[in-house]
Length: 401
Image (cartoon, rainbow, N blue to C red; front, side, top):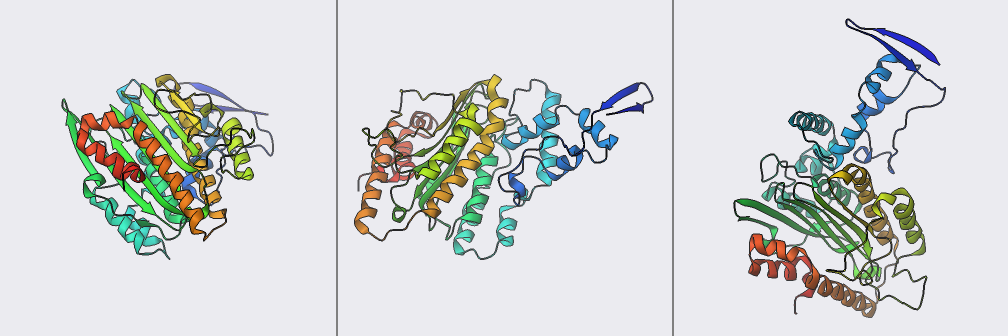
């Protein structure tokens, strides 16, 4: 232990530094050390936080910034992840967000990212055009002084798909579904949708709904290709309402295989090694996201939902505790699902593939009839458009053939 005296013009600070050789401050470790976008801390944070030979400047800088870690977590999900009543604190978070984003590769324009990537097909060009047509990823909310809380999730998923999925391309959809704006009582909202396919997945759709402080939603659904068997669908729903007073996050490997209620070990089509990974993620690594329970108002948790589901319903007080886990949990679930699908045995059996598609259709019919977003979209965009949107885009196999 060393005691260091630091003189200042107006005060004398006694800084006690406990240094144990071979020990460094805690730095969260990314599951992929080669991917800078997955790192919990940026390079500047890591450099400043390490104690090298008892360097007093770095120690003092960190000790005099007790909110550094908390504020950084805040920037991952949004500039307002936890309740901040003061305007000055909002500005501090915004400045930190801008500084952090300036140094991140993910903040390159979509066009620059795609130019840097090699070996990609024409589908990437289609994706670029589809995004740029409506200014995606958006940088500002449709409402002044509101934040796009879940745009980092949207951007990370796009980047991950481009890097890890083969033959990624855009699936053409009705132009009115791609982008729509609406207004009710001077409250404006907009929604952006895009549908993709690749060798591993027959359909991946992404939706971002921006209604300013009133509501922010990121939704995505991944359907594995029928040749991969009756693997579960990856469902992602993350949303906030009333200036983050009400928040909900649901991430699940939603089974399409009919459950065998007579078998207590039935895995609903999830391979055993994947099931163990999900149990670790849900019950140990992200335990804070496993305490919620689904309401029976819209869905039956025994149909098309698994026991590995991450579910969190929380208010303003719980924002920080939940969101510090939510962003990495979302990433881990996506990685595990993609690994599962890529590792699946490919079958050319037409009968088996048709069976898988019939289960996807059953999932779509069930979900279209119960989706709670229908009421919200109907008020903002009209009942006729919403009905077509749900049947022809969100759950496209639910529409009569």
